[in-house]
Structures are given as C-alpha cells and as structure tokens.
Amino acid sequence: MTTTTTATAETVLDARGVTMRFGGLTAVKNVDLTVRSGEIVGLIGPNGAGKTTFFNCLTGLYIPTEGEVRYKGTVLPPKSYKVTAAGIARTFQNIRLFNNMTVLENVLVGRHTRTKEGLWSALLRLPSFGRAEQASRERAMELLEFIGLDHKAEHLARNLPYGEQRKLEIARALASDPGLILLDEPTAGMNPQETRTTEELIFAIRDKGIAVLVIEHDMRFIFNLCDRVACLVQGEKLIEGTATEVQSDERVVAAYLGEPFEGAPGAEEVAEVEAAEASQTAEATETPETPEAAEAAEATETAEAPETAQVTETTEAHSTTSTDGEAK
Ligand SMILES: Nc1ncnc2c1ncn2[C@@H]1O[C@H](COP(=O)(O)OP(=O)(O)OP(=O)(O)O)[C@@H](O)[C@H]1O
Image (cartoon, rainbow, N blue to C red; front, top):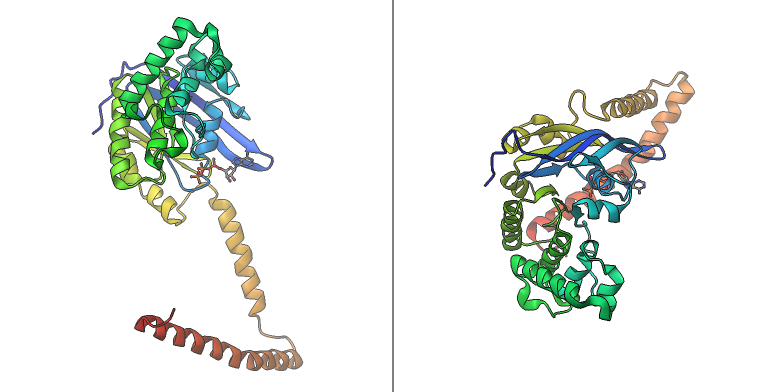
C-alpha cells in the first residue's frame, strides 16, 4: 500500500552532492536525495554500497567530505544530538538498547532532547523532575501503546524477544518527536510475521505525519512499502523511482546478481583487472621459445597429470556418496 505524494508536499530532507571518503575509499559519491512530508522512501543497494555511511552523513555521525544536508530548509549541524533536536531520528542496523533498563526507561531516554531536564535527570530520577517527568512518562506510554508494548513497560529490554526489541528502538526514536525517521534495516533477522507487523507500523508512523527513509535488503518489503526507492551501487546513486520503475530496471537486477553492465560504477576498474588477468593467462600459455623449455614444460604437465586425475576421482566419489545421502 503506497500513497501518492502531492507536488506541494514540503521537502523535509534535502541532501545534495553528499560524498564521503575514508582515505582512498569513496564510500558515498555525489548522492542527491530528497524526502518529502508524507513519503516513505527506500534506500537499497548491495552490501557495502554505502547506505549506512549515507545515513551517518545525514545524522551528523559523519561530516560529509563534500555536500550539504538540509532539514526543512536549514543546513544540519554536524553533531548527532543536534540533528536529533532538529527533528531527525534514527535506528541502527545493530540493536542499541539499554539492556538493563526497562522498556519504559529506554523510551524516556529517547525523550531527553525534548525535556529541559536532560539525559541524567531521566536516568537518575532527580527530584526536579516533577510535572515534566510526568508528561514525559505519559508521552512514552503513548508511544509504547502505539507500538503495542505498553503491557511490557516495566520489563527489562534484554528480556524482550528480538522483534519487540527492534520495535522498542523505533519507539525510542519516535520519542524525540521527529519530522523524519531513518530506519536502518528494521526487519533484519525478523520472521515473516514480524516483518508484516513492522510494515504496518511504518505505515502508521507515516500516517502520523512523520516522513520515513528506510534501508532494507528485503525487496518485497521495500517495494510494497515505499513511495519512492533509490538504489546505491558502489557509493553512487544508480536510479531513483517508483517501486515498479526500480524493480524492473535491468541495472538494479544486475547490481544484485553481480553482473556488470555498461557504465556501471566501478566498471572501469573491473575492466582493468580483467585485462591484466587475461594478459597473465596469455603469457602463461605462450609456446616455449626453445626445445629445452618445451621439454621442461612437458615434464611438468606429465608430473601434474596423475594428481589432477586423483582430485577428479575423489570429487566424483564424494559426489556419488552425497547423492546417495550416505556421506556425513
Ligand atoms: N568508518 C569507516 N572507515 C572506513 N571505511 C568505511 C567506514 N564505514 C564504512 N566504510 C566502508 O564504506 C563502504 C560502504 O559501507 P556501508 O556500511 O556504508 O555499506 P552498506 O551499503 O550499508 O552495506 P550493508 O548493506 O552491508 O550494511 C564499505 O566498503 C565499508 O567498508
């Protein structure tokens, strides 16, 4: 279920020319991406394509080598807590909960950018809490109800099943009252039922007026969920479009299957390596120049032959037993 975004929708996120280099490695190269209010945008790409690095550039964890990131028209400060305060929240690929705190306390920590008391007041429950603490707790309970975990508010986070821990991370991110939430592989490790529930949760987040940018490897999930999808390959944006446009693009298919295509990012390097390998092979198979060299080459081949035959036999024997199902 996707929605059609009107042309008048406000641009919430505007990333322009974002480039991130680590020494000689360009992890993200000149990427533009916008997210408008009311939208769910997907970011896909093979492993190592630069998706998480791009998220880190958007959220102040990394300062992009080049480029600019704006949230609702204002350039974001290069500090993650200031980005959160500005209105962008995120979850991480690997769950980062406070395991020994309760479910409710985890959400309260997420509210610290919206309370005067700050993180330590929340953690230490200082007397100065008063009404502000009460309001925060009410908001946190609302969020737990929203994600369906209000009945587990006093459970320790570490005792939640995996899928609920991921949901709790989302609730903690929502606690900062964001206008945009970035979700890094929210269904990683989930079973199909949990994935379906997460999909519904993300639609509900969008329906609350929060824009969503989501990284995911589960293509069925992404194409069902997103209004627009951008595909990164080797740090560059290969294509951006509707689910239908992106999933039928042969370059996206090739990028996932590992088949090179004309003009693919990194294609020049691949061509150079292939040319070098081809010339090495050609050198190795060249006819020996002298009769002595020819004799030596023949002797080497003869010496290698029995070993090669033995390997073939062993492989065949192994495959026979495997087919019979007896080999363990
Ligand atoms: N802090 C870092 N220092 C050096 N190289 C890094 C750093 N972070 C990421 N990289 C490199 O940048 C490239 C992009 O990595 P990134 O994690 O962003 O990819 P990804 O698309 O999120 O991959 P995955 O889907 O596997 O999570 C990789 O080659 C990675 O090794």
